[in-house]
Length: 509
Image (tube, rainbow, N blue to C red; front, side):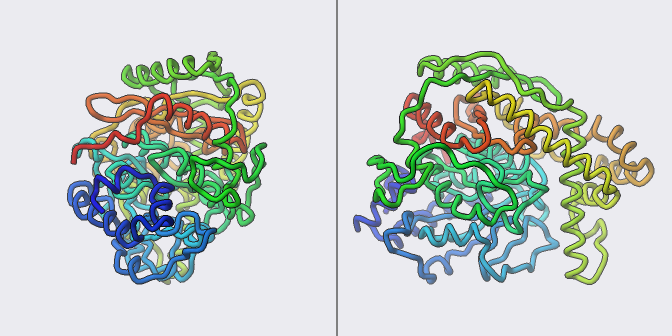
């Protein structure tokens, strides 16, 4: 199977070829590996190459394994695969090997996916770019001087480069949507609680796991597969109000195997009332190329007959959102450190992790119970804000990111900044450190995630849809819906995909 033949199919299409015996699953897997070998030296997207296991391990081939034989990559974080390494982008975890499958990995295995590797990420998934001491820099397939984004940067690069049609990712502040925006692919963050994460939750409920894909229908089917895990989640979300098992001939699946989300693509999308918001909630301004991409989205929506109006959820202030997010994440990183210290029998020091990780970890150890309770209250309050907002509007349209894709190294703090951050945290405490450092070092990060992170706090489903480009680099737009309404987002994305297809666009590698 040549790359040209492999690249023209999405995951559902490849599964159909395998079912019809037009091609063997080994031939499909070899095509993926050939592409990986061709592009990985340029992009650096793979953290663990597990091809030998993929060829030797049996995978289900019965009719309920709806993606049997399709190549797949896991992000090297949260989603544990028995007897496989999981370093989480950290030298500290270089020797860690999972002893069981997470519930989400098991759902993927049951669907027949052939996992052949794990993708790169920043240390512990903390940054919106994929640069780590352990794995190095993951680059954007469309321009190697630019970042693929983060933290699911390896996953987005893999899909954009044509290594796989689908790749697992996780989103705690935009980590599916931002790389999808940077790499010109489709990325959906589900409702909080729709998909179970290891341990029941991650980052106090900020993280949602799903996939990055080229086609909307692949994302819908993968959500059907992943949603079977939601009984293991600590959170509950309402089921979408669509009938189960709707027949959709375009999916190429037995009617009995269609779930809520893949089946919803068959139903008609009503005329939607879509609110437009253009400025990030966590500071900064939206750049002109991003506004032009938003304008193109508005043209398509008007062409489709939707109603467009100005409107915005009344989130907390930029400083409150930034501080609450930092407290929640740093508290989680301190929890990770506590786990490692118990496992290793020693106290971690700054030498064990990267400087930026150490600053966040050190902050987390200093946070009191009252500060953490306050941050969780702020997070849940944003959910109430969105619930009220979506009583009036069906969907919200915003940019994914206020700026175009940064160059490699542009977002990462330098050594001087890291040293100053650690020094000030020790001398000033949490309040003084926040007021001093967030105003300088951290501002660019909070501004960068200013459109995405509020919806990790609210738990709302949100997606990045490829829309335009600037100087050869892709630009996406973000759509958000009410809790449990991924079906609306997927149907809207499918409508846009039909009007302005993006799957055939590919980087010149």
